[in-house]
Length: 398
Image 1 (cartoon, helix red, strand yellow):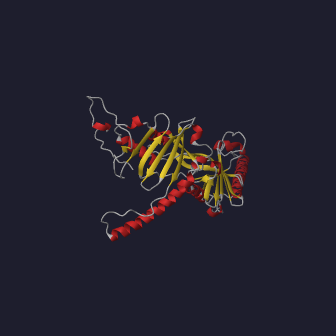
Image 2 (image 1 turned 90 degrees about the vertical axis):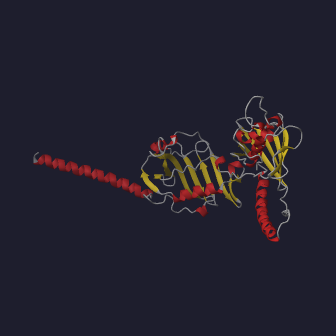
Image 3 (image 1 turned 180 degrees about the horizontal axis):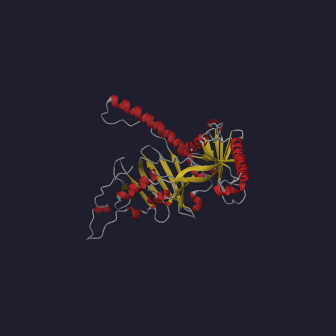
């Protein structure tokens, strides 16, 4: 290599090095301008107490969560009470988000990481993300984000089939205020725009049942009762031997009833003639439950109302000692306060109808014939009464 060639090579290296440095400096300038520093909080100025509205939307759904005087409500469900814990957990997560990576992504590449802002009233395009806007009581926007593609991390030690491609470990986030894109270490799976996911799932607790009666179409006409809380269930009228397992299944189904969503305007009567159950409890409460299968899908509409008040005093026990009486009376007074509070909530819930899965209510919809002990034909084995071998069961229920 002669001197001239050497000088040309040095000059070329200087030019390439200068270009590389310029590109690096430009990237660094853009990174600094975005304000998103690695390890720093994404929303450093956001405070939990300031958030009074949470607006979440995606390509198909939209939910508005608002803080009222009596707590948070779901606007799309007729201002039904919202799950305060779920809302507070999401807000705290958003406040604690830390940047683990900063990305330089142009508008044309936003769909690739699902960071396209969902447009209200327009058909969703490819790569639309989930927009989360937080506002204060005056309606001022405190933060406006688009949550994009979930980042998966390989976990060889996870045996679940769903973890073959990896487990959720982070998510792309676009800050609409400055159009910056970062990666955070939380997948934020709870940030959903489906209104039903945000409602408070606390439901009526029908327990300590004394009698349970059902009336409706298709042969649903029966009444079962028990004398004491630990007594076996029996038919309250008519002939036939009640199957203990079926009785317990019906009582437990009512006591463990839950719902997936709230029907804002629909009622069980709108779906046809409902099955009506009446449950009298040892607490002097009477619950009326109406069930009707929806015309579409495999779900039921449920409405529960409650009447009555718990006894003001505990009935004294035979030969009760004064010390025991004082202690038990104090315990009963505390239990009664909790029960009164629960009944107040349940009475408020009676204005709504709820969506329940068909499998949950199936034990309550049996006919009287189906509640009878199924006698096995002569010659077949098994214990009497239709009880499975080796399964003594719990004949008394709740």
